[in-house]
Image: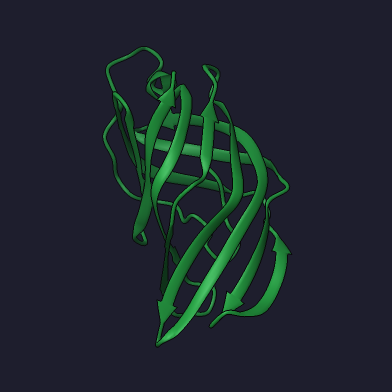
Length: 160
């Protein structure tokens, strides 16, 4: 439930409610690992698909969360140019379910990114907090977010 500058999560999309539970966020409680992250970046005016994995996510019963990144690498190939974004740090905020959508408000972020273009350093930045709405499904040990502009996140549960 985090944002990444050059690979920022984008909002929108439909999704299924996780269960008929009185607390729809209950299915998300636990520690998760992102095994397939697909983020569409439109900051250059052209959509670029970044892919990677490795974010760790902890969701508490009250919907608060912490996402941590330890050398998480996202890559993209656009027009033959290979971009990489390496993320380190943590962010936190509040998640809730509303109308079948996962609504996330990040309240703090100290995540930094290092960007390379064809292996050459292209810049460093600190990611800013953001809010998103995403379609989602949660069942057993699988949590999937989907974004209106494409891409999404596939998490597996490490612990409840």
